[in-house]
Image (cartoon, rainbow, N blue to C red):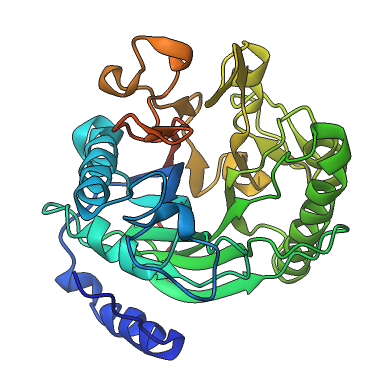
Length: 349
């Protein structure tokens, strides 16, 4: 495999050229779309990047991250992604812990029945891990891409919040997607909380700018927040709340699709013997107001295919990861994916 670096401007040109299809050229689609989010746990290639600390994922490292193991990782990830949406795969998928655009290119080559396009930007994270989005160009068209820098109190460079604006080709509605990978709990949950609060404030500011222009904007936030639906960064700073999806209200509160799952004691990440719901999906109120694009009531799910669940050891009943320390397990990720469905109630006239 040859490592090819694609300049940002070239990627933009490629992305926009892909969206040259008219509605008449599109394969017929129904009025629902499926959105998923997944922390894929260290999707690194096997090449040394001198600008990042990726030394753990090289063939000569203690992990012995070889081309064969990288290929197996891609096969495993594709198996889970194909499992989503009743075997059809997601229409939009937010991904975190990916090293670069090249690993994403190798990943989407695994899909024959989907016409996936990559949206990606390199982040300032010291390890070189980024947030990204892939989407089916038969369902969505690209409008714009932006990266939002997060400056945290500790001063450590961290991941961008990745903002992708897509057009739903069924009715040309605009949907904002924010892919998040907030600072970790390294050093302790309490001590590191200030970093995630800083990320929440940055995201909140970006949302306010959108709502100033369009109070009914369609916004879907997803990713690994490294905080739970009940934590301060989510409930106080973002003001994302639990809700009854059958009750339509005209208010400004963000709606946390993950909240009820947390209250049930379920989660996407197994920490010791405790489930954490740190992978979340949060939506703007316009997606639950009974008009146009709507969240499909109670469709939020933690995706747990039986083949992905560890059957023994200290990971038992959780997602089977690729490694436990430096011990190769050959698994999928240490996070389960999450997903939700959305439906177009009426097409624009």
